[in-house]
Length: 98
Image (tube, rainbow, N blue to C red; front, side, top):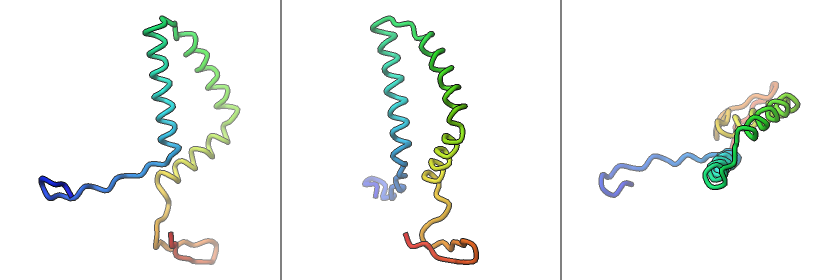
């Protein structure tokens, strides 16, 4: 409970570890780019263009794998069912426990 107002805190959202890892990598790469640009005067134009082309090539080559990865991330972020829900698989019904 909040000490001053007596209002309960909202529950803290748990984010999947892979999402936190992706955000961490993006932040570290951004910081590295800023440091390279500011201290070493490195021109990042060529590096960014090369990485963009490489991203397109890898994205097209790994299209199905990336689709499966993002589907898995979507299921982790927003599970399709919770504890106590009834689930049908074929003609069999069951209730989820955990």
